[in-house]
Image (cartoon, rainbow, N blue to C red):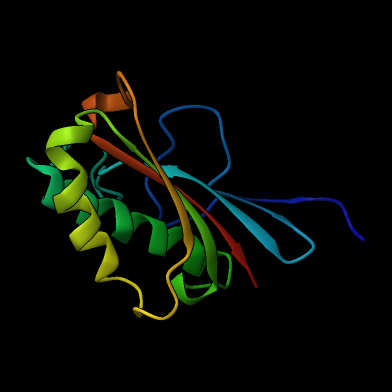
Length: 130
């Protein structure tokens, strides 16, 4: 067993707080929650609506996973945070499901929260096993 590896992924979004994009321990990858920020231009406003933000969040998570040598196929657990749970749950879930084969859906928890950084309406983090 070795100590943890703290990955800062060059093409992933700029952190909005002090954290690593991915922390790796013995093949387990703990991917920090991502918002719908633009990795190329952090000052850009977040996209409007749950579908646009969910798609951007999933894209940002894929950047982080790729940077650590993994993909969505390696994801075993997901946590989703929504600021407007009742309004956005169904639409977010429909789009989210399109990223995974129907017979390989990760375990998932979705919770309603009172606020997210940068005014986001969705944040998603992941655990993967390489």
